[in-house]
Image 1 (cartoon, rainbow, N blue to C red):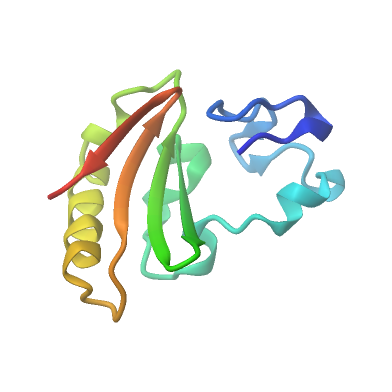
Image 2: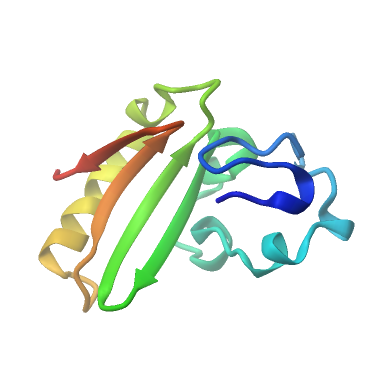
Length: 121
């Protein structure tokens, strides 16, 4: 997402990401405060999904009746999502979404900069 308050354009990795998470966490903008990475809200994601480690932010969205999960990859690590253990987890989540295994169907996409890669598992 774009965050104008910190000059972060859409589809780019935030310059405030550090090894412990967010370097400006206590004073982060409201738009950042309202965002909830799936890694933070779903305990089924292991610690290797911590965005500062994985270089991937998991962004679930519900737009009208359409749901999707976007794996937003740090452009400095464009192939990280293809590495294990992340790739296997992404495929599992995509299969669950296509089949509606968790009570709802969703689309899974990987975003690397301006590239959008649909995952059809």
